[in-house]
Structure formats: structure tokens, C-alpha cells
Amino acid sequence: MDRTPDAEPRSVAVFGSCITRDCFNSRFNPGYKETYRCDLLQNQMSLLSLMSEPVLEAWEPTRVMSEYDLWNVRTELSKSFLVDVVRLQPAYLVVDFFGDAHFGCVRLPDGRFLTDNRWKVRHTDLYRRLRDEGRLEQVRGREDPDAYFALWSEALDRFAGFLAEHLPRSKVIVHHGHHTGWLDLPDRPHLVPLRGEHRRARRLHKIDVDSANALWSRMDARAVKVLRAASIDLTGDVFPTYDEHPWGPFYVHYPDDYYRRFLAEMHKIVVADEGTASPQMVAEIESGARSTLERDLSARTEQLDEITRRYGELEEATARLRERVARLERTPLRRAVSRLRRSRA
Image (cartoon, rainbow, N blue to C red; front, side, top):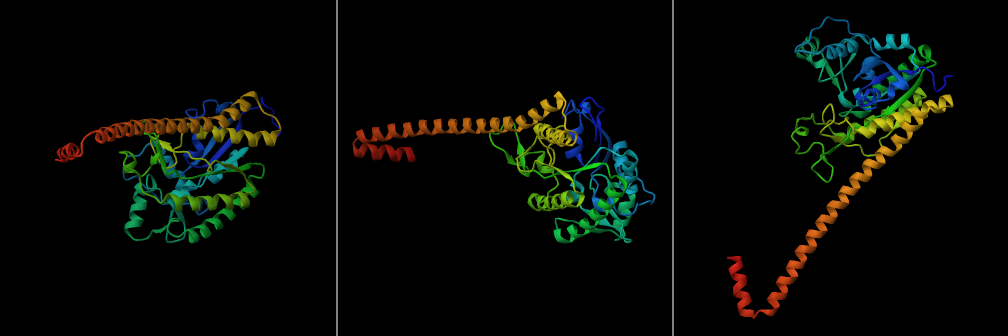
């Protein structure tokens, strides 16, 4: 990769979900197009589905779908990403395994897989017909992680072989993912559980965050090894979702500093490959490193302010209690008992 800092933006293909694609979105990273072109996306698809045979049967949506949703279903069924990514030959292929960790799959009678996407694939007449006929077998990692991981690992091995044969010059980056269990609300001094009392959070599909993340981490670790990939892993920090996220609060809708951190880590990989960095890349690396610290400092400051406020209230209550005790000590016993009885009446 013999580019200079003033070269054309690097071509990027994404096989994953919004946790990766939103990092290449001007809403979250306004200047990313100076450095990268996100030329291809496969969204919310399981690796098991990608590496199985295409599903060419006719289908129709069972509810109104946007063109984007229809495109999601078409590419899910056709597995066209494999053809498109070979045609593109991107400099970087960034993968995340949200589709496997969150949705799981359904297996057709002939062994083909589809992502069990409750937002899109399930709302097709093909899915409904096969389900009603009892011809879909649900395969979910959260229910049997070892069995799912074995199937997934076999698909990963075939994916690695495909990349080695068809994309030998593309650098693969595994974007380690996680479901957050926390929600940041502007009127609360502390994070609250995402599956809590908040009105929007109550409508979320319930998942076991810990088990889903355990499987996700296991897949990421194996993918880095098998694909000989670079890593972007921000799972060691706490990134709560929040009410004003453009797509709403959700398990993988992170705060803005997450996307800046990702871009900074991406820049570091590129700089290591190319040996040079543009001034903008340096500034964004510095900004990404600083942004999470600033959010953590702000959160800790708010917590300290809350603790200070509560301590002040406790001191005031203690002072009032001491004053009352002092008055009682100066009052004859009979009058004190009478007053105490009246206060309890």
C-alpha cells in the first residue's frame, strides 16, 4: 500500500452492521471522506448466511419496506457481497459479527442459512411460508453457543479461504463488537440499565447481554487468528447508549466518542501500513484518544457533584437532629415525653 498522505481516499468495504458503517458516516465522523471511501456494505448479515448457497426463490415483503430494507433482503438472499467485494478489491475490509451475535440464523431444509433478522427477513412471504410449514430450524448462539460456534467456525474457515484466493491484497480488520447494557439519560446522574424503566428502552427486544457478548468475543478472537486480521477493540471501555442517538437507544448505538475512537484506531492501522500520516489523521487520532476521557471525566464530575449534594443534605439533616436532641436535653422529662407522644399521634 504505497500511498502518500495526499493520495485518494482508501477504499473500504464493510461486512457488518451500524457499529462499523456509522464510523464511516459524516453524521458521526464529519471528515472521514478525506481519508476513506466506504464503497460497499453488507448489513446485519450472519457469516453463516454469507457462506451458504444463495436463496433464489421468489419472495415479496409482507409489510411496507423502504428501498433500503428491500436492498437488505435482496443482498441477504443473493449473497451478492461476495461477488461485489471481489470486483471492488478494497484496500480494507472491515468486518463485525453483529448478525451472528444478535440475530442468529434459520436453516432451510437443504442446509442453506439465512440471518434470522426480525426487522427485515422475517417480514417476507418466503420466511413466513417456510416457518408456517415447519421447514425453518432456528440456530441461535445464545441458546447453544458451542454448537453455533462450531458451525460459525467452519463458515469462517471457508471465508478465510475465499479472501486468500480472491482478495489477497485487501487488509482485513476485525471490529470487536459488544452489546451495551447501559443507558445514559440527561436527567440522571448515573447510568441506568438499558432494559429498565425508560419508556423507549422498555420496547427493546430482550436479550441476555452477557451471553451474547461472550459469544461475540469468542468469534472476534477466532476471526483475528484465522483471517490474520488487524483489530479494533474498544470493548474494554464503557460506551452506554443514549436517548438522543440518531437511531434511538439500542444495544449497539453508542455515544459519539465511540465513532471518533474507532476512526482514530483505523488511522493508526493505516499509518502503520503506509508509514505516513496526514495532519488531519494526526488531529483525529488525538481527538479520538481525548474524547472518551472527556466523557468519562464529565460523568465522574457529575457523580462527584451528586455525592457532594447528598453529603450537604446529610450534614443539614444531622445538624437539625443534633439541635433537636439538644432541645430535648434542656426540657424536663415529663414535657419531653408528652411532646414526643403528640408528635407520634
